[in-house]
Image (cartoon, rainbow, N blue to C red):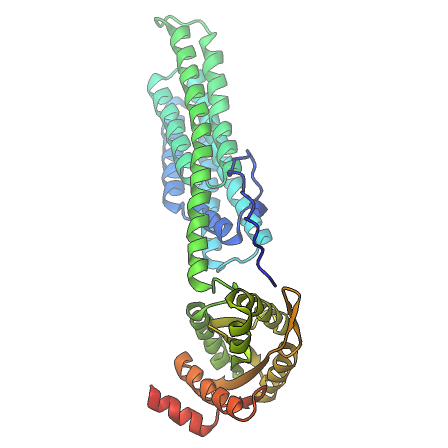
Length: 403
């Protein structure tokens, strides 16, 4: 695989759509955003408690049964939302878009329910013309709006819909109440002004959602890109030593539990230096990229291919029942890597030597296994190249001395 010399296309700036598709986001970023939704236990409980308290207090004082019904619905909604948050936390890491979308929809339903209940409370408060209650409930709408904009803007569809469900009925109720006659001075004018203020703040909040969403996507995407760059080889895109270590630790722990083996194949290309010297580093880099792609095609999806540097690669073969499976893979690697390459219309030939060490048979320390496999690799190259050898006791002893 050759790298193109043409400049990469310039991506258009990210623009907010009212209902952006989750598929437009990298999976790790989308998972971060859903995680953020499900970290709202304290705000959800606080809003629910205040809502229920207001409905019960005012419902009993005014003898309004509808407010008591709203209190019951508010308590039930809050309980179900908190239970959903708990279920998400106990479900473990989610690694696919479809499951994340289902969790996002569950959160959205709860948020919409809270917004509708809050709107109904405001309609009742405004129509009853109880000034202190009116002041508290409209303030509650402002608090709800500010909260969802700051915390839920990472999912704009939920944020915008919830905001409109809470504010639009409130605006309409204020405007309609302004049309009723009342002895209070400037009654109609002041209610119309209040309706205008709520509408204006709603509009400004919608603009803020767009800005916060763009900022969040850029920040989280950049953070995950930097994390990926720190764990991948810049030339081939394969795992580097850091990511290899992390993945090895995971697979080694699994191997200990399941009584299976993990095989570490240490690869060194035979004849690569001669090609690099003859055709130059760009040709050598292109050849290394092709080697990387072949290795990725050879192994299973659960196996790991890493580049340690230069022409040295590591293949981490997991979930083995017997060492013979490692030997079969090593032979296939030797066969496939030894096939001709075409770089700048020039056919090139190389081979590969392989040293193999297995865990937990030789321990579960990556550096020791690398040293053991390197010793076997050295013997394979000395014995004629294009060979695969397992770590022997002498290789393990040398690894222990080096450690």
